[in-house]
Amino acid sequence: MAKKKAQDVPPAHGPLRLEQHGEETWLLLEGSVHIAHARELHALAREAAATSLPVVIQAQRLQRIDLAATQVLLALRETLLKQGGHLRWSGAPASVLESMRLAGLAESFGV
Image: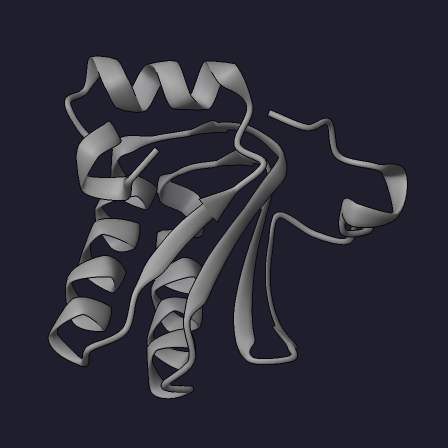
């Protein structure tokens, strides 16, 4: 897998953000995303689903994600699939990918 160049990594702002990039909606996750972020993440997930664009979870700066936040993202994936859309991850650190694998979620998220 090719390494990301500095210009390919979105700038740091807050733990959760939604941005439009061309024909994609980016959901940016940074730092530790956990149950305290679930309400905000849910609102952003609903907004992302409403765009009718493919959703890319930008996770280059994600350090960890808990089950509550993961459940929100699984619900977003299911909503997008029902709408004929899709969700993909970009730049998730190895530690996050391993956690998903251990939880049996890697296949669900396509990582």
